[in-house]
Image (cartoon, rainbow, N blue to C red; front, side):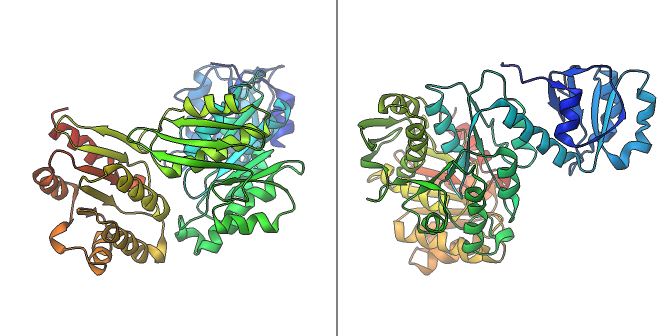
Length: 471
């Protein structure tokens, strides 16, 4: 593991704009941590007040572990009695808000590292595009990438704080569910390249409308460095609205004729998707090790970044073909009883649900297709309507059987019935209800798509189907 850039006491004060309550003695810190369970004695501890835990309660614990520096909320100074740490040579810095201080440290670190930063957002495909982009640019440059799903105002700074002297690029993911979040994350990451994969009906509870989603995603473009480039999806009309109103440089990707980086001859297979990548000066055949036409769109965004980085088509191809499918994202496998599962349980919104259903239809060929759908969350007042649309899509797609679980299961069922699906082909209820019926109904050759929002825990159904098949 590459060692992060170390921190002097002077740099910490400059970055956080904090006040020294207890001075250390010419200390040099190896990194920044917010977790008392994994902190190194050479790290500085930032006490974050979260939903479940308050880092200030672990201040004494980290000091006992040998930590020589803490950043705390100014209001906690009296309770923690920082002055008593003076004799021990422990640095204690007080700030107005430790979460903001963490962001300032990350922003300072991003600047002093001198890396090129790619920031990615979108209603669907952020994590997959981030993985693809990192694989592409790492063909040529030492690259840091967001681990897991650390894409919020705590996760993003923790990623940027891992920058080492050897890193040349950083590829980060920006998530949000309220206006202003992308703006704050862009201010921290200061992207040179900003990618918007698409704009769809996700997080409507906090954003109210599709236009609200568009404006929130557009905050990324506003946050790109003046000489930077917005990499935008030419096939998405809402994204194109943003392209038309920005003065930043824009590179378009997609299937549309106006895209600079395009794809043609797409073939979706059981475990892969092949296509021809059309770059301005080169053309190359690509075999993605993942299924789904929508995966090509993600690959085009990554290829666009590779093109901007000056990589030839051969290196872009190598990066795309070397990706590792994300867990719970279009993972396809056939059980020992001949039933094929599409595990897309990581998360769901109306756009990703539609894309997954279309992939099921492409892959199952003449076999029967089944959807096991959990609720799509954070849709607010639009929830019932969006679930009805999913049900209607099932009926229109000729899916043989629909299983729905969650608060909006009946809405999904109503949409399916309203578009002609037989009541006999729709089952709503708990996971146990679904498993009891589906394990009686499935036969060899059937294809089953399992999908729902993260909080629905739909991966449990996948696990139990594996146990039922004797695996």
